[in-house]
Image (cartoon, rainbow, N blue to C red):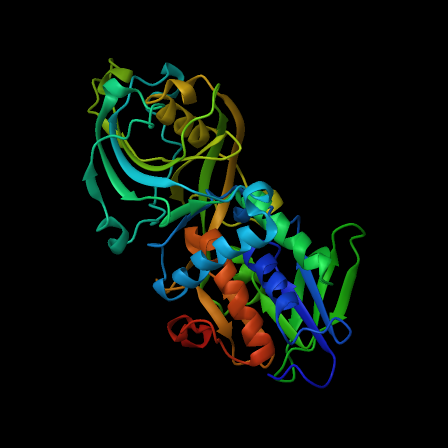
Length: 408
């Protein structure tokens, strides 16, 4: 679609990292003209209020899908350089590895408590990523894991292949950068997209502050509402999987590692039951703000709520994560728990994804289903969405396999 000619009313639905990066890149596109192009982002609750503010923030060259990872990883480095990302959102390169370790006995009050329901892997490591594991000696600076508990360390990647950002600061920074170039942000829940004439006509939402129903005209609508995409566009095969995480402030800063763990929880944590040892696999990310983020397995025991503000946090699941990481590290065991939280990751029900691009409705676009790699793949997705809107096609990457029209 050409950018020349009539006024464009571009509406983005969703204030997570995909929506905010899309707004940013739309305002940076060579064809963008703020006198003729209005960009409005509508977010139901708050910017970065869902997974984009509660994710781990890991970036990796071996992430998936491969057709946007390279572009997005490169853009992360460029954006950090251009906008002082080191200080604004904690961009830095990190080491990444897999740790096999024996945990110490858990606290009695959590013994045997699973939080209920089935557990699901977050599927962060693809087969390609696993193939990169290399046997290695345990790094000397990984000194915040108790040495007598360590069994092995396998290096997955180092600086240049793995980096990180603080997701909340990253997302809110890009919302602000988009606003600085003319984008507007509205807090309200979208209830309808009028596409009655074969093309988008308007967007209706409930204003968060006043509770009023309001409608704004639209020539282009980009739906980037994560797991809530399906509530707005029922035909889009996106679902949500809940994931819990905690943020711990150690008593002293720890070295920069992103760790995938395999922790053997000993049977003696509950001697009366004489249970067999169990295995926990939390991911542990040291952050540049001197906190440590840790997340556990996903679950589908609680359906996706109406908004991100209604997400239920299972305190038992959070406590399990705290106990598991504390069982291998004195720094984490004795640290201050700063957050116990949960969010829903957007998954494609087709098994593929994410879905990025045009739909059969003129002016309607989808960018959703990024699973646990939304932060990693947001810059690439945002740049591609700006190309779809202003150029009518993707130019920076070959993403035919991600075309929403293949699945809806």
